[in-house]
Image 1 (cartoon, each protein chain N blue to C red):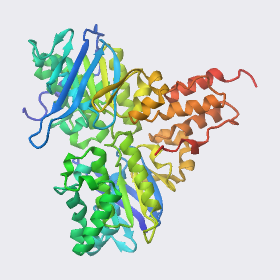
Image 2: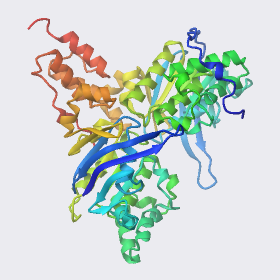
Image 3: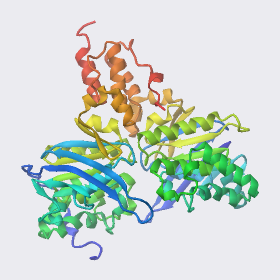
Image 4: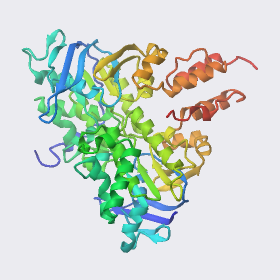
Length: 274
Length: 308
């Protein structure tokens, strides 16, 4: 599990002022949990995500991954093995010259024995439907395929947690649906010793409807947390924060305020189509 | 590049002139266009096949289709960034590759690429926005006026952000700076590639408002997007590209009626329409042809019984 207590992170602006990007965050994510994180641009989502695997260090407060503190440099390699990241633009995280080497890259760095590495690479290529591109250079893949490769390379290292930082912004509808259903599959994967933990950052409320919990960040603070239903039912609040809500929740809110509210949509009918 | 500040200190004139409406003149006609990328490593791959499309002056339409369907490639043909292998593009009846200068054409058609904020280069926001009109050789007064107007149109305060570095703005603000840079050229036609990708709800709303406003002023708007929900909420005519061919060209209502057609192009009907279908089954609205929350509310209001 990841435990965040009293996390502050600030930096100095060019005007010499101190700006707090993260302003006292307390947060825990249990193993196997699926959490969606939303918030307006500039609310600190990416900064927060980067604190969770030690890419950024808190100004004060603590981030612990299974009791390993991110402020202890000696723990960082192990923390990053346990907490993988998938970024918005896969081009920023792909480093190798072929698809196969990209998946092997992290394993090589971990010192995984050669025979085992070959097996994991082959399995991963198969699982992510990338086997036919084995020897292709990654930049010749489509955006959706590249994001799939980025995810595959992370999954190959078998992290307990994967953090997705707006992984769908560069994808089209089909690519997005495919990514979400891949994540569903990973959560259901019975072959894992422990169920995968995910934190999914997005601007698209429909993409967090299947999460256990949705967290809203605003100006560096967690301002709302709850089940998707609980969070998205706070229509006025979400609007004032500038965070989109799924359309069915907006319509239900309108039905409640304009009629007796006896006839409402059933939100579960409008989960993302995959 | 001139130094920082560029005598723009007298810039903050609060009163702004409203841009006068122009008479739209530009008709774009794409005739049997085919194009393939040539690569030394592989056989040429045809990206556009026999594409024909007529875009009337002042029209607003969307070009949608999955990744790799050829949307961006087609857009790059509009200003002659790519040259068709066969077929042609005519603007006001004139083949753009015959005679008239592409430079003139590029002033008339403003292209906004994907993630245009990555192309900002000015030391300050204003420097970036004035770059285009200054290059047009306009008088400095007009350059300033246009830059101010453009920034106002994208809801950026000149006094507040004009002298700041674009690097210190949020992603959404940088996107709007890039957009202002194109608007300040006052092109007759805007072609935008995924202009709202990666923006939050508020940022998306501002960009869409800009498009509506530009359209009202008579500009032709070509919106390239994979987001079927977004475009169907905004406009009526949708052109679907699939595998480099025009798969559908017509009114959105007709597009969504044809399930087989949709499936073939990998299009899932927008959620608004799915919700409208559910509301219709519940007897709360009379039509499933609803594409935004505003349209749904409007229909619900119309069908609400007057008294209990």
